[in-house]
Amino acid sequence: MQSGRRKFLAALAATGGAVLAGCAGSPAAPGEAGGKRRVIDAHAHWYPQEFVDLVQQEGSAHGGKVGRNASGSATFTLPGMNSVFAPITIDLESRIRMMDDAGIHVQVLSLMQPMVYWAPPELGLRLSQAYNDACSAAHRKYPDRLFGMAMAPLQAPELAVRELERAGKLPGLRGLMMATAVSGRNIDDKALFPVYAKCEELGWPIFPHPIAPLGGDRLRSYNMSNLLGNPVEIGVAAAALIYGGVLDAYPRLEVMLPRAGGNFPFGIGRYDRNVEVSPALKHMKRPPSTYLRHFYCDTIIENAQVLTALVRLMGADRVVFGTDYASANRDKRPVEFIESLTELSQGERELILGGNAARLFKI
Image (cartoon, rainbow, N blue to C red; front, side, top):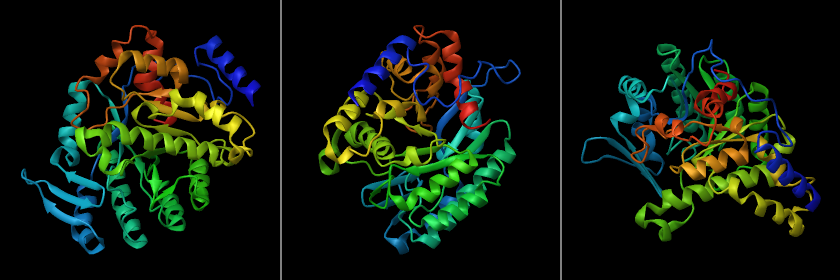
């Protein structure tokens, strides 16, 4: 195992992360859409009104608290989770105006908390269907601007597979949005393997995203739940997919990680060492570092040096542009931030701004 890790590190040093073991395909050429650059925001959240209405109608019967905040926006609260359905997160016309102002040509829409796992399976299915149908309708309204990632009731995997079969036929859907944990279980739970099989069959990436981060009361102050809890959640999800055999069982499954991969990419040496020393991981046939190329990481890290280092580690063809719209913490000029990374070549920046996401989501 030690020799495998040395080989990986030698390859990384020699190539700048561009060609590593396990690579599935070569980098796409910049400006591949007829020579015209498309900036694609791969991490952008949306609540369809149909989804919000269903949560408001049925959420209180299943342990949620439904209400409105001081500005009049609908709210939904569950233990450890507080969702605000503000107009900016719902209205598509204002979103398109924002995209135009920021120089973003395409967004890949995804649901955020509360997602659907808090609900009993039948309601979780209806919530997923409401989201998926609305997301496809948004694509049909703006076919060159909006695509989406489907939701599925993963608390009932057999229903989730059924919904993925249906959603896979809807125009504009290109992946599966999911949480970093489902009903308190890590995402290497064997019950979810049929879901991954269906995603692999569809050619859909998965997007594990935190909704109720680790940390509890210790992280409630200073926004630390978001700042620190969420990156740990992302790292747990990546570790589960590697150590739990998901990526061995489904070698064509690709994964997009938010928040520049959380604490996963720069901890990869410790992931390798863990395999070397832990008897619980004797089933591992190769170092975790050789799985890096199953993953894409978004650009949401807000630091030029760290993002540049991430590109060198992962490869320029494994980093996708994201804004976390409509988070209040988002960079309001995100394209300019990527263009300012002058240590990267123009070709690398073009891949990050759109070429990689176009390949990943078949846009």
